[in-house]
Image (cartoon, rainbow, N blue to C red):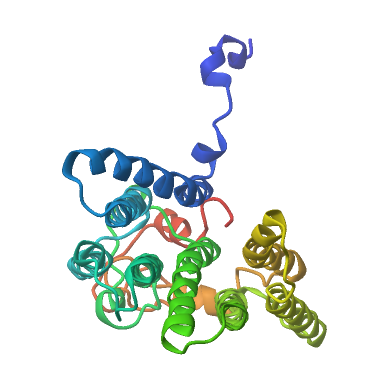
Length: 336
């Protein structure tokens, strides 16, 4: 008799996407942080404001920073091979956005309301930069400081492999608070320091931050895309349409409040469409390229390159992993 008939319904049920594909589940949690962290921090700031009466925006910034950094550490801790250098670098990097939120001073004084916008922009920018720094520390370029020694525990089941595509997506989600924060800072600088008109400042800030977002997005995905002349031309055309659209949206003088809100909403909507269009447009490069294999074929203990060897034994430190451990290191868990 088939043993599957005796299985309980709970055991026969297939695992959820988050359990079947753990890297994909963690990426979804990172995206959910953009909704959960600011909203929960705003509620907590209003509640604590009635108790200790500090600056509500400062409370919101502190809560947002703590929520994002702590949640990111909890989400990705199993995918990081923790060394002393990585742990120390992560701690130092975390002190920067948290220190700015606690210190809560603008980079230049321009007025009460403008100072609040500056502080908020600084906090968002530093939080996005924190994401980039931790990505480099945890799964970075394999050169310099903490990432030059890729030590892995002998039991590979305790540490999951962070794939290049998933790492690029995390870099992309860290780009968003950087662009928003720089937009706030640039707007205050152009209007209150340079004394440009509000409409001109909107145009300059839109184009500058849009061009920065386009450059970051292309740079992050460049190793994963097959760049033919046609793809380069289409990418340039899409970038030009995006930049022209956000440059022209502040020009019309609308009296309607709804249309005025649309002028503010069009740039982030256009950025979202740009990200969707490009990832659908760009042809993907195979993940088993020689460069990827060369970076993956390293000793699990000391990081020495095993390229060209006929055995799994590392000539540098003598560590000899099993074939199963080597395959688990080379093959991504969920194909991301």
